[in-house]
Figure 1: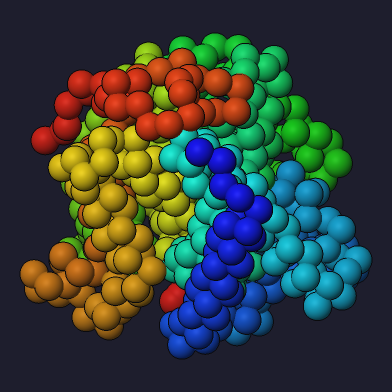
Figure 2: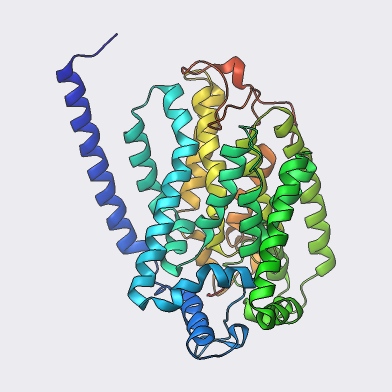
Length: 424
C-alpha cells in the first residue's frame, strides 16, 4: 500500500536521525577504541618512494628510520604509487583515506543493495547504517589508521567477481590481475578462477599480472631484480610470526611454540584448509553464487597466508554481510534466520572488540589459545559454514527472483561442513 507524502517525510526524518545518532556513537567509540598508528604503513610507502625518486636511492634498500620495515610490494605497486613521491605528506594522507573510504562504500553497496531491495529496506538508509558499522570494524579502522591498501585490492577483486564475471564480461580477470601485481596474496583469486573452471577469466587475470609485471621490469629493471631475487624472500622485513596481530594459521602454530614453530604442522593445516575451500567454491560456482565464492576465497587467503595482520581481515567483511543476506532471505522468525543473523552479529562484535590484544604479551595457556586466535576461529567458521545459495546470478551480482524474500530460491546447497605491530 502506498504511503502518503507526510508519512514518507516522517520516516526519512527518523531514519536521518538514526544515522546521525549512530555516526556520533561510532565516532565516540573510535575516539576510545581506535589505536592511532600515525599512518605507519603509508609513511613507509611515502619514505621509500621519496628515497627512490627524489634521493636516487633503491626502493628496496629503504627502511623506515628506527625500524626494520621497508617497501615489500612488487615493482608494479611502486609504479602505481609513484605519484605519491610528488605529493606532500598531508596530501598523501588525504588521497589514501579518501580512496579507501570511497571504494569501501562501493563494495558495501554492491553486497548490501540486493539485500535492501529484496527486504524492502530504504536503500540509502541501509548503506548509511552499514558504512557507520564498517567504520567501527577493527580491520577497517586499522586499514585507515595504517594507511593500508587492503580495501583498494578488495575493490579490484570485487569488480571481477561481483560485477564482471556474473555478467559474462570479456574483461573479467583484469581486476584480479592488477591486484596480484600490486600485492602477491590476491593471486589466490587466480587459483579460484582455475578451480571453478572460469578459464577465460583466469587467462585474463594471469595475462594482466604478467603484462604489468613485465612492464614494471622494463621500466625499473634494478628494482625488479632486487624484489624477485632478494626483497621477496627477506621475511625479516615483514614482522614477527608469533605476534598476536598475525591472525593466520601460521600465527596459530607460531604462538604454540614461538621459538620452534612447526612448519610441517602449518603446511598440513594449510593443505586441509585448501581442500575444504576448493570443495566449497566449486559448489558455489555450480550454484551461480559468485558472491559467496568471492567471500570464501577472501577468507581462505587470510587463513593460509603466512602473515595476516588484523588489518588484512577486511577480507572477512563480505562473509559477514552475506550471513546477513542469507538470514534475511530465510522465513521471518525461523530458526535459520535467527541463527544466521546471530552469527553475523557475534562475528562482527568480536571483530570490532580488539579482543585478541588481551593476549598481546602472554598468549600461553588455554585462554591464550582460544582468545589470542579468536579471529582465526571466526575465519574458519566462515569457511566451513557460510551458506551457499542456489540461483542464477544477475549482472549486478544478485540472485534472480522477486524482490521480496524467497526461501525456496535461496536454500543452501548441500555442500556439507568440514569436519605491533607493524607490517606493511
